[in-house]
Length: 338
Image (cartoon, rainbow, N blue to C red; front, side, top):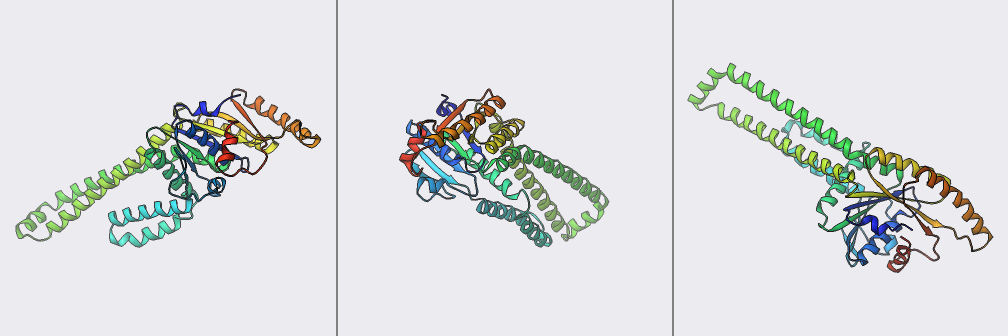
């Protein structure tokens, strides 16, 4: 049977995703615990708004990292808080850089942006990039992601955001060149007036100060966009490098999870991500009564569909476990099947 701990070897990032309710958080946590007990430093990060990480570990986990076990930390990204922090940072920057008469319009647009489509995803993506950037050099980050549709959009965002930022950079460059040319034309036309103002000591210092402020503003905007572009470019590089990251798809041996998993695999492949393994969770036993035996046979047919559709992917089967899956000991038991 394939070993997920081997998949993690040498990589910086693993994503664990799939249809809602198949046990993504449990698999991500159990894998993180197994690796931590083997001596690897691990950070498990939940990006799902319906967080289960804290419930699974039976302790409070929030938007700041907490220790779950030796060498194992946990974090639940709060999309609403992340969005508010993102917009607050943008507002602060814009208020500092833009003229006073535009401040009201800036506030209005940022208020509208709070609930605009894609705003939460973009903010969460920034946080994901930040987590990867700030990870300990030898730490593996395991992202416990939201259900399939949300995850596929999130994975496609780095390329879109990089292209969007590059477009902003090109517009900013054209604007700066146009402004410089316009100031040059204005400067030539008003050379006599400026010379007179210099002699008299009036007017020109104010105009020069305004020009300097515009120049500094343009330069700072360029720096901000450059940093943003570099961040998304690096995130895209990490996600598309199979030596640095991989995706684990968790599913149940049922019709809808199987179909959704095959579709998710196609979307991830189109986005340039490497899918490292499949985990079929909660497999019914074949020797525990007629009902479960019949259920096992039905699941076996769906497993055949998965193997036919994705024949080259390692497939890990996790049995249906007795008892409640809560706490470190239960997760350690689950990890023995990974």
